Amino acid sequence: MRLFIAINFEKETKNKLLSLRDELQSVSLRGNFSLPENIHLTLVFLGECDAKQTYAVKTAMDMVFFEPFEMEIERLGRFKRDDGDLWWVGMRESKPLLDLQRDLTDLLGQYVKGVTIDKRKYSPHITLGRKVAADTNPRQIESFGETVNRIDLMKSERINGKLTYTAIYGKNGGKTR
Image (cartoon, rainbow, N blue to C red; front, side, top):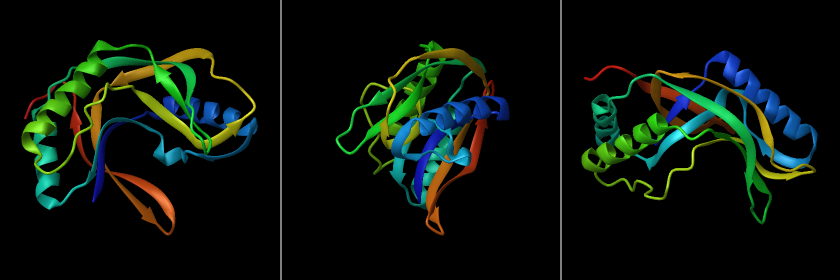
């Protein structure tokens, strides 16, 4: 199974993100734009995991502790790519978010054998589109956000040719195992 750990958004936040995606799409010549049901913030990408590794991921998630915290979305950006840019929205710097991601990464490194955890500096962003050729530039946006009180283990698969992300396990903030 191809897995990652993410923050999924409440309806109001997701609608604002989709509005930004739609605005970008309207000024783009081309691109692969995120499906509404796939909008999320990745905390840790795990890749292919077998049943034993998946169990270990759930154990690590159970062990992480975080209090619910506010996350604020504040800007549009892009990563330049030769075949079209990856457009994203970014967060205001958040110590609780960075701490959660670091703690998860540390625990996963201890408990999940055989999975390579990315050690690069975490750059939290929500992907709006890939391979985008747009007639616009990154910019500040009117900030918005929500309280993060849950993280989810997500399965990524193609179903009838459509990329589908499904939550298969969750952990609420403010609780330990």
